[in-house]
Image 1: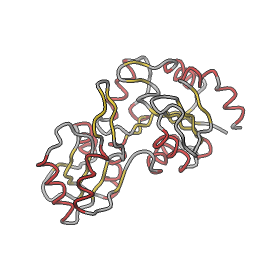
Image 2: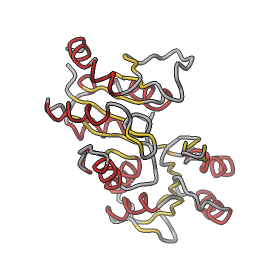
Image 3: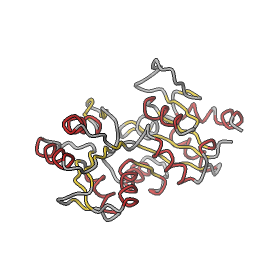
Image 4: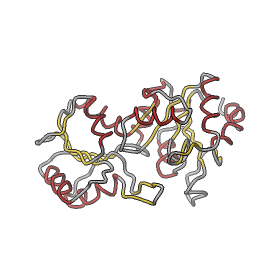
Length: 256
């Protein structure tokens, strides 16, 4: 029986600063029916409060505590392992999540962390690979190669970490979808089992593949990857959250 929904943000709930069709009505439905839900994102740039505030401006109420992001995932792992020092390539939102758990940017780091960073340069690259060559673990905030923006694509965390991986021959730890850990975090947050949850996303290689690996049902929202030729198929396919809402009774009935 489906008791909880995990919902990707960019491309599903909004695109840039524009709310996608049906998004507000869908969240209102979940709230009215008291259905557990959280939002989950691979973006490495922002603190969870940013997403909560952005959604609120769009008329969608999602508390910060119901946001599962890759910077938060990294911060929780930092806390779990007792790390307090990091060398970070990334934006302020990632750094703020680390500060929240008492991790600071300092020489002699416990770990090297790579996220999206418009100020990525040769100096940062060199410092990072030197620490990795000295044996510091390399963490990549998400495995994504490209970050789509309104004016085109930018290199994302996976691409920015690639030169370090190549130069050091290290095996990095990747966070975010499609890795199972972030889905497990969302399940723990909502206190449900994998078979009781369903993931809604618009990217096959992260949302659908990751959900399947975690044992979670999936809904694919057609987007820039419309009808890709892949062997692994989602459980449901819709154009937007408006269509998902129209099909909710059938989805819940089928998954009982």
